Amino acid sequence: MPNHASRRNLLAAAVAVAATAAGAAATASGPAHTTTDDALNPDGPPGRHPDRARLRRAVDRMSLAEKVGQLFVSRAYGHSATDPDPADAEQNHAAFGVRTAAELVSRYHLGGIVYFAWAHNTRTPQQIAALSAGLQQTALTTGARIPLLLSTDQEHGAVARIGRPATLFPGAMALGASGSATDARRAARIAGTELAAMGIRQDYAPVADVNVNPANPVIGVRSFGSDPRAAAELVAAQVRGYQGAGVAATAKHFPGHGDTETDSHVGLPVMRHTRAAWEELDEPPFRAAVEAGVDAIMTAHIVFPALDPSGDPATLSRPIVTGILRERLGFQGVVVTDALDMAGVRQKYGDDRVPVLALLAGCDQLLNPPDLPLAHRSVLAAVASGELTEERVEESVLRILELKSRRGLFDEAYPSAATVGAVVGARDHLDAADRIAAATTTLLADPGKLLPIDAKPAPRLLVTGTDPVSPTGTTGPPTVVLARELTTLGCRATAVPPSRAVAAAPGHAVVLVCTYNVPEGDGPQRTLVTELIATGVPVVLVALRNPYDPARLPACAAELATYSWGDAEMRAAARVLTGAARPSGRLPVPVPGRYPLGHGLSYGS
Image (tube, rainbow, N blue to C red; front, side, top):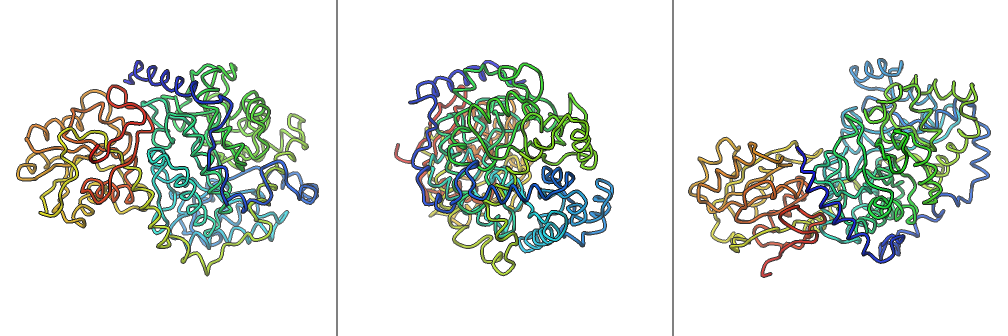
């Protein structure tokens, strides 16, 4: 069960941090707001587009069905726009009544397609670029001839739809541990450059949620941390990085998903913050994103009674989307729903009503409805009945076209097949990921000065623990990657499964045990750590994801947090463990009962 007392204490501490920060309405954007990336966004922030009249004429030329189609961003199955594998063709036919992604775009006049690994869209960079080109070819030669906005969730860290050979950076909480807006902006700039090379021009990142709840099952390390001012600075930096590379950034999940105990993929979370707490904790990163000129903001499928007592999820709430996001924050860009196939938005209303209610609330893009034909018909029917006006539809279409124009899609929609191989996973990009990761590893405890491990005598090290499924396209499992990297640095490291670890421990200089989201109370991870400590061999804890793990385990000889378990983070951890790099990360969240916000050690400290 979640520790509610710990959560309340953490929330109170976070409110205190926010309340004492200078200027409650300021956004702590800092130096990230004065970068050369601004020169690559010449059309300025949403709402001041110089070509509005031309885009308005384009909207006027569209049929109603074409206008409604522009509102939808759908999945499509297959690696090719026109020649999917037979199984993917069958999936398309079952879901949409067509066999190819190109037919889907043409039939429904779609405004965008969202790429997923599970939909078999993301095999290789060259394949992704070819898929993008094929989809754009269809969009530009049929219907209203409007380029698509192709998108994906490439947050990095725990959520990445595109893996190797693309460059994979540390995730948000790891960047929060480094505290560097420069690194956050550079990671987003490189990531955006690689996405654009593959034809993907909207990324559903950065996460602007402030994670003040250790029991949060869906945000956690996807957040920059629990300090709203620090999160605001890094959100603004990433917005400028992505958009400086020609990719629309999408701050999410408005009005804030950082203090929930339900995953909106499977249920309907409730945010219990007061309005005052929301203004102090949850608002600053979104305000920073707006002031940085973010192209899009994604809504959350959460109920927030203090902001709207109706019981409607924020995605369907006019007081939240229009009243707060549009009117209070002054956001004039595109509002995209979180995926409409998630349980959080489907519990109160049917799939025919959800897209209509989202538009009435003030949303623009309708992301991945579970039944696209039904959703498309429902919006058309709402216009026919007068529930939605055609003018309201046109408002959203115009905002979407302005976004596409700002990102250059009317000038060049096609990715360059000749350059994608040179851009995606370029050596300097991979080196930058390693440099950025080096500043994220956080040394939490080393009371006996066990670290760094001297690699010169080639000590025998045992690596064990939980091996979560590796983030997309990494070379995991993480225990194997960590052992390999330690061996590269001069140690003799062996990875073994937990079932063999206790028996294998004697004779080793150190045991490194990797943990992953340790629950409260007894469990196999706690048992493993307890039994390894009892062997008498020094045990070093490596928390692979949530930094809260040490509070739920016996104290070890040394403790580190990596915030993610991709290759770059494992390489960084190995360098810190052996002294090839000095630990410099600082906790971007407090660990209740163990470590305060900002805690972090270095060698010699």
